[in-house]
Length: 184
Image (cartoon, rainbow, N blue to C red; front, top):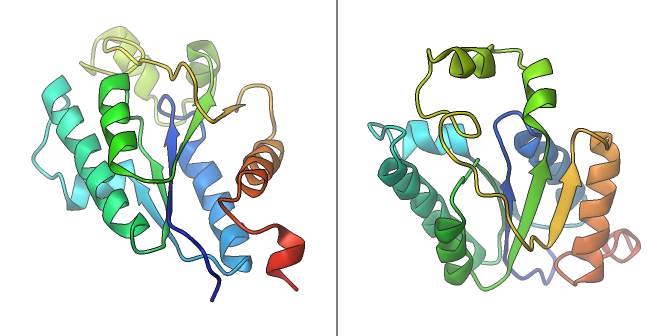
C-alpha cells in the first residue's frame, strides 16, 4: 500500500475522442505503482446513478455534478479517481474542480472530421442528419477546456504516446510515484 493521496483525473472531450480508452490504459499502470484506482465512466454512471436523465443542458449538468460528487468522495479517501465523461460545459467542470482537492483536467482533443471517420456506432452521422438531437459537438455545444493540466490529441498521437504524456505529468507533479520508486 502506498502513501498515495487521492486525486481526480478528469478526462473530457467529445464522444469517441479517447477518454475511456486512455483511462482504461492508465488504470493498470497506476495499480502497478500501488495506487487505489476507480474509473467513473460517463455511460456507466448515466446507467447506474443518473438513469432517467435526458440530454438537456440541465440533465447533463446534473449527471456531471453527480460524477464530480462521487469523485470527491472517493478522492478524499485516497483513491485516484478517473472520470471519462464528455462533460461539455466549462462551468460545471469548474464546479467539479472546486469540489476536489487534487484535480487534474485531461483534455482528449480530436476534430469532428476525424471523429466522423472513426464513428463505428454511426452516432455522428445520425446527429449530422438530425436523427439524434442534442448531440455534443454537432447540435449541442462542447466547451473545450482553456487551460487543462494535460492536453492530448487522439488525432495526431498514438494512445501509447498520450499515456506516456499523462504519466509524465502525474509523476512530475507528485500525483503518482515514479515507476522506479513504486517498484523499489
